[in-house]
Amino acid sequence: MTWDRAYANLKQTFVPGSEIKRSNSGRTYCVDSWFDEDGQENLRYTVANKVIPVVWIRVSFEQLMTEGELRTAWFIARFYDGKDLGGCNFTTIGALLCGIGVAVKAKRGLYRLKS
Image (tube, rainbow, N blue to C red; front, side):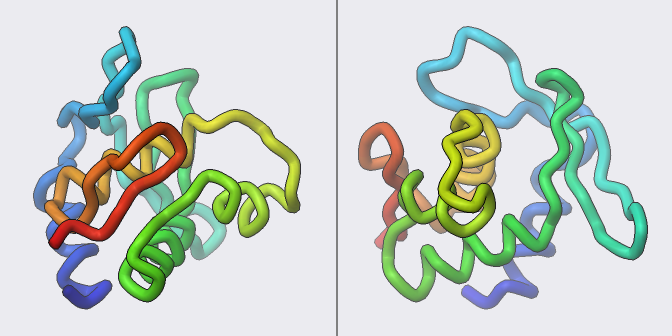
């Protein structure tokens, strides 16, 4: 799948109000909005009003498609300069990629390309 196709699927599947199904969480995560700010598109979701830049989703998608997996350690190194700032955005991106059928959760901190 290409990023353009994945992105279209994300926008179609995860409209505002849609639940983001995350395992091992007792909280309900929902899409609040897709919005542009300072020339960058973002996804806001309803846990503490968190925001994920769409470019993070794209780069994570490309990592999954290229390497066949997406790991917490890679995510922290890539987006948080090696500082563990919690896994909320990582697991949300993993859940988004699972939601469009390109990933499966293998274990905590690891998503694999769906075969």
